[in-house]
Length: 86
Figure 1: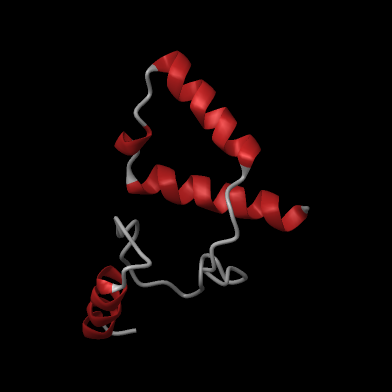
Figure 2 (figure 1 turned 180 degrees about the vertical axis):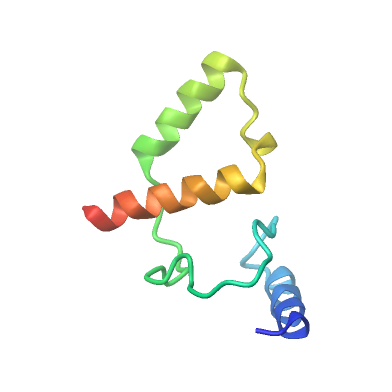
């Protein structure tokens, strides 16, 4: 995908009212899709994972919004790996 096509696609996503707070986590050339089996459809929230984050956040004062792109990317990959193994 060329840079121009990427930015056009990203702009279209940002303008779509179904999306909010879109953030670029990684922008670099890639040989393979990182989430090749992920349809990008919303499938709900993992209640157990939300409770785990709430406990960690509450006990430690961790502000999850302060996580950087690399940490979020790793968490997404791990969550997807767990979901696909179920």
